[in-house]
Amino acid sequence: MKFSSTRPRPPDETTSCAPDHPPPREEAGSAARGGETEGTAAGTGDEDPQPAAGSTDVSHEAVRRGEQPAAAWSSERAFVLSTAAAGVGLGNLWRFPTLAGENGGGAFLMAYAVAVLCFALPFAALEIVAGRQAHGSVVASFRKLGRRFVPVGIGVVLLTLAIDSYYFVITGWTLGFAVEATVSATPDFAEFTSGYESVWWLLATSALVGGILALGLSGIERAAQFLMPVLGLVIVGIAVYGLTDGAAGEALEFLFRPDFTRMSDLDLWRAAFGQAFFSMTIGQGYLITYGSYLPQHVNVPRAIASIAAINSSVAILAGLAIFPFVFAAGLDPGAGSELAFVAMPTAFEEMAGGGLLAPAFFWLLFLAALSSCIGGAKVVTAALREQWSRFDSVRAVIAGIGAITLLGVPSALSYAAPEWQIAGRPVLDALNEAVGSNGTVLAALATSMILGWKFPPSRLSRAFNLRRRTATALGWLLRIAPIGLAAVFGLSLLA
Image (cartoon, rainbow, N blue to C red):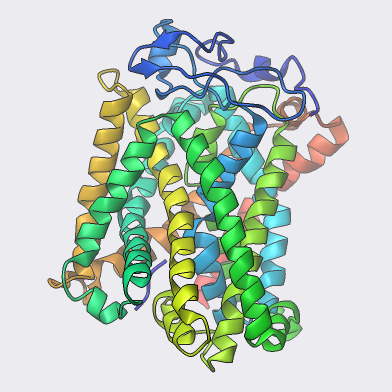
């Protein structure tokens, strides 16, 4: 089986790229078409009150016409938690341990750290700024850069829609495993996928995500404020238990003692950078969409550093939570995609307290996957809400979630009784390889190249409050890095 989760802003920042409509209004209490705005959530530090994270999506045209106030994150903390929750997902809790196991553990972790620090951080910040300056969806943000880039924005939304279609299916699996492990016992994966469980849990996941998105930004904020602390407590608890009762020595050596002879392996670097793109959601529209709701006073470098720290910490904790059990059970750490749904249940069966560990582990996976589902679906619904004036927030959510669910049915049926396939492979696996692995890398490189060249040093200096010399060095890094990475990926594929 194979399948792939302040310093005050300078006052002239927006003058280099004036938005198509006024910045978010301060009056948060007014009613808006399509829903009511809510009171401002508590901020952090000495932040000024911001427009409410209202129950409606931003509609670019509606704001321009003054029909509704622009929604905004209620605080920097809310933005950081919501954006981190969108990126954590299965990308860190399932995909990271899988890739680390397949690529030598410590060597992969070192390459991943380089990828995050040297590439993911600056480009993630750039995507957030692009969204904030455009004050719109992914499509609107690329239109702001030039009409010839509109197809790129549309392509990113469609890519995210395709990824969501099978990601919702996998999230449904985690929900099904969590429920069944709680009420009875952890199911056998082959038996779980022999009927139509994948379809029913897909529908349940879609309904849950749709209900959260129908509440607008306030729904996303509330979900993140619940999901992130619970996710953190559970993963720390499992990691501590695993390091206490599992094979802690082998796990720590595997993760933190790199084999430097593997550092020359291009496949390892391709996997590490691909994971950095995936976990930081670069090129998938999440950061641009969430950035479009970002108040001007928020310090973007500080916020993105916090988001990257949360993402990386969760990824490392996932390794510490999984590999002690894997080594204790004598399982192969390079088992690949089967690590979570096949290897881990086997490990839990052989350990004391496995009856409690199994449901905790799968509820952890579900909460992480759900947070990414919310972010991915938001990219789609925000674009629908903005581009079609007939859609109010509820209709946009219904249309977006409906499209994701409809496209997800073939993937669900590929791991169900009908066993739908493409070229002899399950539909879900074929989609994952086409769009989840290759598509995300290509999209990340394409958007990075465009943004790197469209943001000259003078614009970077204003956006990030940098000195001219620092902005010039960053500008060249942002322009050259995607070209170098494209060459590395090309050579890796040819090899």
